[in-house]
Length: 317
Image (tube, rainbow, N blue to C red; front, side, top):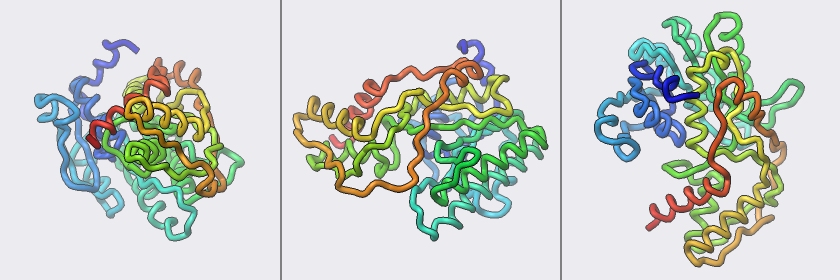
C-alpha cells in the first residue's frame, strides 16, 4: 500500500485502547507520524510519547485514563472522542489455567469489548480494528485457558456486530509479537534476553513448541493497513510471518547473539520447567493477508532479535 493511501489517515480521529502497552504506544506514535488525531486510552497513569516521536507530534497526542471494565466507561470514552477509527488493543493477557482468572478475563477481554462494539455502532464508527489472538479456538477446537475462552467469545461477538449490526470490524489476529521497547518482561523473548545479559541461565520448558514470531513494528504497520483497506472490512487478517520456529531455537539464537555482543557465555536451561498443556500451534496465512491489506512483514527474526537485544542492552547499561 503506497504512502499516498496511508495519507488518508491524516486528520482522521483515531482512538487506541491499551495505548500504554507494548504495541499500543508504538501504534500511537506511527499514527501521529501519519498526521492522524490520536486519542490514547488505558487504565494507568498518564504517559508521554516524547521518547517515541518528536515533540511536535507528541504534543498532539490526547490521553484518556479509562478502565473499560467499569460500567459505562466505554460509551463515555467513545462519546468524548467520537473516533472515525477504533483500534481495540486493551486486554489482560495471562496464560494461567487457574479458575480464579475466569472472571477477570471475562470482564477485561469480553465484556469491555462488547461495550466498545456497541458504543462504536452508536456513534457510527467507520472502522473497528480489534486485536485478535492466536490462542482463540478455531471451530471444533476446545479452549485451553480463561484467556482463550474470553478472546474466543469476544471474536464471536465481533462477528455479530460486523454481520448483523453492520459495524465494519476487522479482526487482526496477532501472532507472537516481540521487539524493542517497554513491555512485560515476563514474556519469553525479553525474559530470556534480560536473564542472559545478567549472566544468568534462563530456566525454560523443553522449548519444543513451534511459534510464528512477528516483529512489533511489522504488527503496527499491519494494524494501520487494516484500518484503511476496504478488503479488510468484516474480515479476519493474520499479522504474522508464515514461518514457524521452535521456542528452543529462538532461545539458542538469543544466547548466541548475547554471547557475540557481550561476551557472556550463558545458555538457556531447557527442561527446567514443565511444558504447559494445551499450547496452540498456528501459522499466519500471509498470502491471504497480503491480498486483503497490501501488506507483508519486512523484518526477519534474525534482524528483529538483534534490534531487541540492542535495546535491552542499552536499557540495562
